[in-house]
Image 1 (spheres, rainbow, N blue to C red):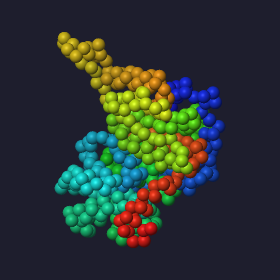
Image 2: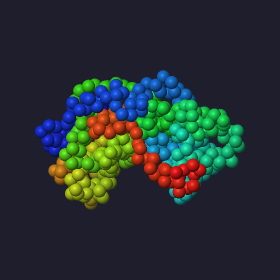
Image 3: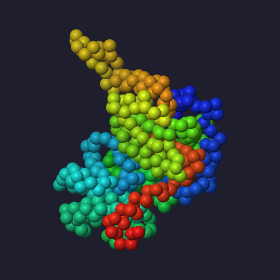
Image 4: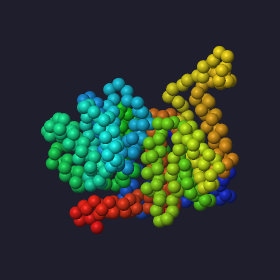
Length: 426
């Protein structure tokens, strides 16, 4: 089970320390549905619902895609793609034999980026999974129109319809209407789950399963993890993380850097940034979520972290057991002066380097919180997702905001539609 290590932050706490009583109250508010945004807390029971209602259909659709297509084009933006992309980059960064390539579209309106995707697609057999609650979000809607046209030109309208899966509202919306009229297979974006909390629904699970990830293992682990973290105690890792980061925020640490020493974690960090930024950045308050990729960023952002303004806290995700191992070879004559490391495991060297970084950053005035996961697999992924989601809900309520709305996101959309001349836009 995932663990939180606060030893690198304790010297920065004041005498009161993290407020676990407030964490307990926030957890109770969350699970009892008595707080603002309670209508969007369905993610707490989502893994069990998916197991009971949709998992077999999701796996069946994914197996069909894997059996006949070389590429799955996943069209979505924000919570409609970041979780799935994070999972695939983390667990399946290089497609294995029989895996279709997963291409993500609809998160940009760059013509150059679109051209790159089209070149990547080429003449390969492909299918589309379009993900949108409404179907009216401009970026994915434009991408879907373009890729649907390519699909129909390649296979004809009737066969193309069998190669489109829409993940959308159960009953209403533009995309749901199009799917019903054309006969596309559909999956549901739950009404009581916001996009940034939807990765453990068909939104994330279908692309993940198509990529070769064991969706059943993810869901089974998520169910067990949520049950374990229902513990009402300061031993609960979600309480520890939520209470510690809120305590440090009150002490002036207003920027949280999420770091990991696995390059494949990059898009998990992007998902985390949306989860916490969209949930907590309201009413003029909130911890700013940023991310770095260690070791690489130690040689770029490392200077700022070590010696910049002391408004930072650092959270490091560590995978304790590598999936692979290498030993440093011996070199005759020791021309690079590295024989002192000969025979030692690369994972051991990496762990010692991580400890050196931790000590340096703490001594430089940056509190360090560590999230320890056993390994980079389906179990570790599901534990991370459920942990971060639960801690986010608790942390948001501790700060006094509604963690489940995003009113600020609509401001740019109104301006954009007005400038584009959309009928009825104001």
